[in-house]
Image (cartoon, rainbow, N blue to C red; front, side, top):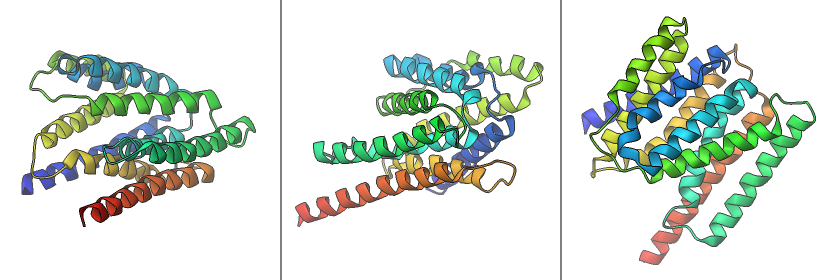
Length: 246
């Protein structure tokens, strides 16, 4: 148990380092850097692995076109999807949460259209969809001991090209996937569920506290609303389960 807690802390630190590094590069990283982690798990992933690879390629292509704060904040959709599409959910929960997410995203896209926020509405929509695909792939991902270790050698040319930050991002993301796979095998506690809440939160918090990275107020407000939506939905579903048991 102690080792699992330590591993959880390390994974959270990797998420913070990854977010901070993306902020330093201002999103100017090669697509290969975000492909490497997906390639690493591709043999065991099957269709889910291909979906994860596709989502990471699309996300990587959009990074230079979007503000860093928005690119990192969009991952808060992971706990929203996790709660809304859980076994405890129903069509009403999905509809209400979907309406909230749609309203908040439309607000962000209208702000971008008015020129008051960096990026474009289409990029915001594409990033949100890529996160959904990544979540769906992770949900259907079956752990295995098979990995494409050769993909890690692709980090060497990235480093040799004078892009150490991109290499660091690849290593951090691969480390997070490896840790999630390891913790997911444990039956004593739902570590992956906790990681789905923690990693997007600490990642965004890591760039908020950096004075050199501008986090626009609309992005911060929408991020808080999405986190609050996920938390309140999960709380209501837990209360409903307790009432049914009694």
